[in-house]
Image 1 (cartoon, rainbow, N blue to C red):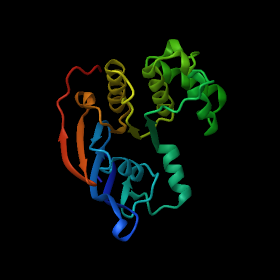
Image 2: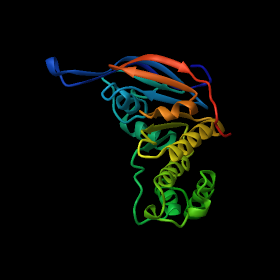
Image 3: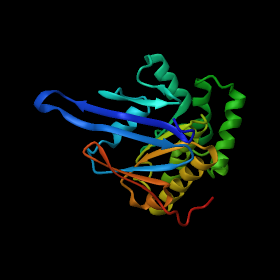
Image 4: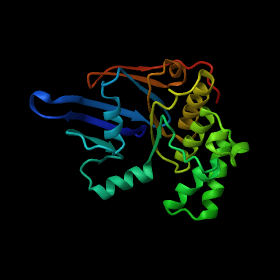
Length: 237
């Protein structure tokens, strides 16, 4: 596999149901995703976007095909190895953010690190660093109810980035945000892809994100129907 390729989908097929009731969510998708790029995955509801992220991120075993990471097959591994892959290599960001109402921004990021074995002092130091990185150094003691939707989404991104993932999967991370906050989050994701050399795949219906993307994939009826590189404008580095 090419050294720039972070993860590969190989003839992925996902079928739900059987017989006349079968629904083909993915129809033999083959795709390389590169390090250092923010890729948008766009398409109508039911087109296969979530199924593709689930298969690539080790969340749902495909009906057929495979995912290749570092020359190794993901779906030939056992459950424990797949869980380890998700824990150590993947980061996930969802529309809701999933923050705890009673925890400060600092604790939202630090406490999950302690659960995966990071020493408490180091976890809090790392949390401070990453919150500074996403522009929230002055809000570390704020609760979710004291911050805007855009700030809360940046806390969720900081929590994900604190694990230093190689592979990042985002599902509609800006759909609940206004234009200004959506742009901040999109620009942050692209900047992190570059600075960390991470692969970031972002499912979105939000056309405002196009100008921040390195690549745009269009999916329809379980197939990639368009794959284009983009011209970036107005992006902060």
